[in-house]
Image (cartoon, rainbow, N blue to C red; front, top):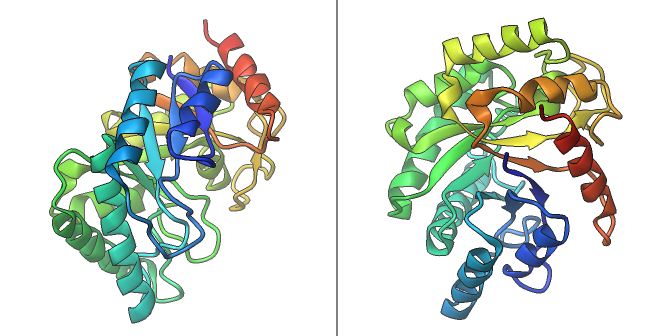
Amino acid sequence: MYLGSHMSISGGLHKAFERIRSVDGTALQIFTRNQRQWKIPELTDEMIEQFKEAWKDWGDYPVAAHDSYLINLASPKKDTAEKSLHAFTEEMRRCEALGIPWLVTHPGSHLGKGVDAGIERYVKKLDKAIEDSDTETVTVLLETTAGQGTNLGATFEELAQMLEQSKHGDRLGVCYDTCHTFAAGYDIRTKEAYNKTMDQFDRLIGTDRIGFFHLNDSKPELGDKKDRHEHIGKGAIGKDGFRNLLNDERFSRVGMSLETDKGDDLEEDRMNLSVLRGLIK
């Protein structure tokens, strides 16, 4: 299976591959830039070449990018919405230039204007970003969210609505975050609960539209609607939940990335990946 982690790009985009290799990871997620700033630096030909060469040396493994947390395409505030549109369009262009096939994004927040209105705004801006980007190879993955505040995408029904309303549904998929969906009320801890959750996802969206996973245990309990990641097996989901997922043959070739806290030595990633590998039958 493709198991890895989100890695820092400190020192250069290509440095992420050194870090993922050091933990024996076979899946990688990165930010393509400083995700806490609106400013978007230029991607030079040298940077792109270094990235592609490092990827080639690492192996034919899946890489996904995550967009900036500042982006909110569903915002009713004109200034934020326009900055978000520009930033997301550039994120797509950067992914295509680097050869990254998946761009993971949070569906945004309606900020009190209501779910339906928020989804309508989100889809409109998302479609425009796809069109303005002039990209062809990047698939946007809508990430499942925990349901905190006015964030969209906590229910499978909301995600399905976004996918169905978009004019570019063939360019869209889902990134399934285990912590977020658990916090939103979707249980995977027992075989019965896991099957119920995945059957519901398959019926509303289709499991074939999952392009990437975020593997995070959850500090909050089921349905608490709080986004707080925990190390694998040390949270409320527990090892059995991840065992159910890791042994589902439908996802045997889908990239799965940790997003758990770690130090500079990456020892926590090694620990979590070891636990995950030990759950595969």
